[in-house]
Amino acid sequence: MYRSALKPIGTGYKSRALDTMSGKIISMEIGPADEDEIADTVKVMGGEDWQLWMDALLKADALSEGVKTTAFSYIGPEVTTPIYRNGTIGNAKKDLEATARRLDDQLAAALGGSALTSVNKALVTRAAAVIPAISLYISILFKVMKDKKLHEGCIEQMDRFFRGVYGGELTIDEENRIRMDDWEMLDDVQDAVSEIWEMATDENIEEVSDIAGYHADFMNMHGFEVSGVNYADDVDTL
Image 1 (cartoon, rainbow, N blue to C red):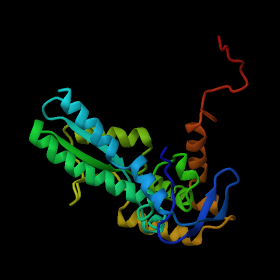
Image 2: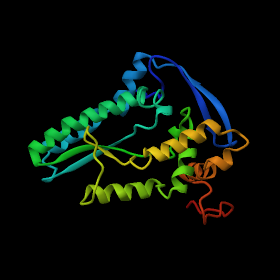
Image 3: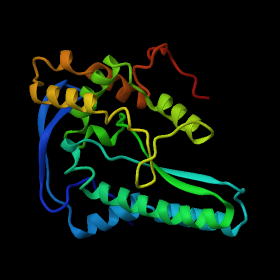
Image 4: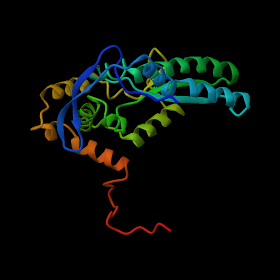
């Protein structure tokens, strides 16, 4: 059995984080991954399964001419680099991106198809709640992007993604990655996030970040605090 681990590589990582239940800024620390954890994370979250699926579909003649396949990735800002892009999950994402390049050549030759990775913007996930720095970063990012009318939730981002993939315009970087994080990584957005990151405290966190939006997304994801749902009603389970 393989188990992924969200850990830094080489050295431990300590950062501020946001306890979304209490609304307090806390300190979190994670020790470095060992070699087994690094390898297991690549096995679980890298590109091997993607390659196996596409090989099987090709062999079964189940793919159409011009087939497009995309896997999701993330890069993020400098503050999360030690725990994310340079950590175990970052290693897995790099493997995923290398797989995309191989698959792109393979599908282009076989069916005139393509394979890409899409680097998406930061969104609320279960993992984000327990990775140091990520929850605080997202709460601040949401505030900045909403103020600038650039915010996208999961559905809005996927709407823009599919419109771009099928006939629209996409931002493609030099490594052949779709950059759905293009708005997140704008200089003015990141400058504003960095400024707030340095000044955020327990006393001002509700004003300088979108902790309420982060909390709502997190609870909604688990089926709680959904608008229009009366949680006191009895439910017929038969």
